[in-house]
Length: 371
Image 1: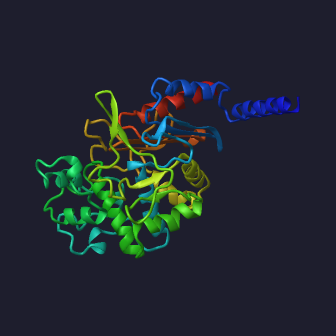
Image 2: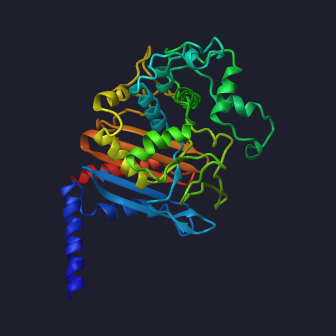
Image 3: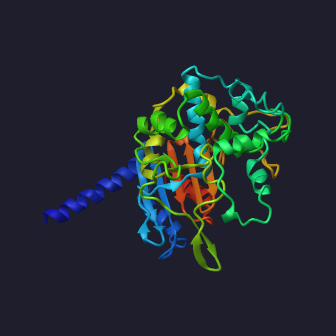
């Protein structure tokens, strides 16, 4: 009798918590129904975190983190974040600006005097906002291995990216005149962090970001140097079967996408952003101003885009948000922060075909409908 009463009280408490957070009682079931058609027995999966008004409305794993070991996705499963990483690289730069060790208007030649003339005047601000015009290192690197299968191409590092860019002779466009999403720029930013701080990029992230906010199991992964605990491995579908797709030639580049983390740790990251743990609100606001270029910033397909320092800033159905997706090899990730609504949705997946952005926005719609 006592145990039954206890269970009832717990159930009532959960319902009251969901209602007080502005989330409908049926919300967890609705999210389950979103993922039910996608995740099958023996398939890679998803880790999903929903935070509303500072409280966890849902923290759930679906599917498997490792198909061979048949280990399930849990809240502590670490996924490769891919370009979700860029907000951490931007934060590292911002912390150095906070320390007075660099300025957003510092030029590339300050850090790398040997850099070719086409890029010496690129500023840190232009690297952060994708307006530098640096060539895409991925395209250049692949061209060095004609006819070689992707899996046989050696992995390149941030330092390798810098050296590759130093071998080029021209930019994609004049500085600050266009917006073009640039993994090259964020690899260079990671090298700037190392040059200014004198500390390897993974160590700087750990010392200045991960440890202070309690992200104990988050790492910028360097094979042979550190380990990813509770690791999810990446997969893709081929002829109806899941095959390994965990690494690519660019997987060792850290500044643009090399961090592994879990929804457990990313809950702490979201709290640090909300509470201005690392930077003041005024310092953080610098990152949340959309870059302006002549004619307006646009994606390759011509659609308008708003971007700050490591964050996309486009509204969703007139709802203000800061967000970033990650996409690489066998991983898809997203963080969607609707700051005015105090709503954060994070989805991490170890399957290449997952449309995590669409799933996150469906969850945002469910939250709005339940309010």
